[in-house]
Length: 471
Ligand code: FAD
Image (tube, rainbow, N blue to C red; front, side, top):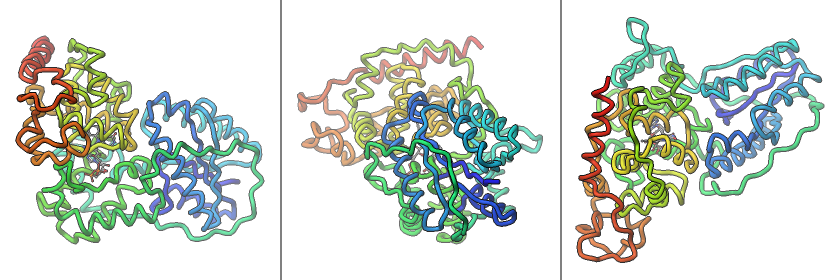
């Protein structure tokens, strides 16, 4: 039989339970190992996956192929098209081998359908299909109230999550050792193509990423509580893209954090504790997604908000996408996203709030646009973040708490340093005018504000009141 490790969003050799288990099984049964990745650009397109993320995935797979080759572990990277033709690939393989497929569970709809189809095929040809629920440290469903219910609010979820961490600790699987096996006789497949190199600024070697994690835990985490809200400061880990495709696991992050920071992760509001909270938010949104599968269909958690009469003005949406709203912090943020494929968390909150509560555009338009640009685009976090900002989600910001983009800008980019980085039209302005450059006819090249925040704010309150009163 062939022990087949089907990698998707777990593109690493360290702490990879699928890889580890397949190799152990191969040793016990004197059978062989093959690692498989299938590129599916048509489905990626259908899911609005950003070009930069597609390139990042391809680069990482090719790099992993080399890294595993050092251990004599073969990685077969196939160019496919959509999930629909995945079973054919397994059918071709199972003509030659009885397959034991090792894979990490995925929670989204088409992914589940794809996996179910492959499972049926593998089982019917006498193989095994072995899933590991390893995206989170605490798998979805594992963290429950005393009554056995799913938490809908973050803080008590976090408390229970932490006590589970206390009692279980965190363990990481070692990197496999070099294996010995004869060359496999594989059927012919189209080899995976390379991408457009748009993600080249993001290193993909596993050791480089682990070094980034270590450096962050050693040098930056202690100051995270203070630094994380300022987009001009590199105060966050920038590991999201790696966590999203599993170059590094959440367990590795927590293990490293504990190693470098000793006990400080247990002290309330310490940098380590606050950073750990972010990793718990990541898990919270995945747990919620599994418990409420309608979210996968882009339904709001607070279902009555489906009744909100969004304006959905195309021209305003376009201005937001392009970073031409006349609100400097919003424009700087959107241009950061468009130019680099990443956006600082504070700015994700500001721009999302602006789209929904200043422009009155359906949050799903923004969710989709973010997905089409982000290198770290990830369904649960993106959907969770958008529903949080739009006040449609579980434990979301209350609808009447509306960010004022100008005061957010004054507070979190006080000197205007971040704005100057991405909005060259405003580079010459001083601190006092950069957050709102519209008073003295100072800047002709910069767009006039596309809405009046005070007016827009009032209208948002009416829009939400309408649906809230009805129920
Ligand atoms: P750090 O501050 O170093 O945090 C460490 C890790 O914790 C992150 O890498 C990420 O995996 C996780 N994390 C941090 N904050 C959150 C959060 N609020 N929710 C879930 N996980 C979190 N994150 C994504 O990974 N993919 C997305 O598509 C995504 N879309 C978002 C959309 C909106 C509207 C909002 C408000 C937030 C979104 N986030 C998303 C969450 C957050 O903005 C990013 O994870 C963070 O900015 C990534 O930078 P970092 O790695 O330096 O984070």
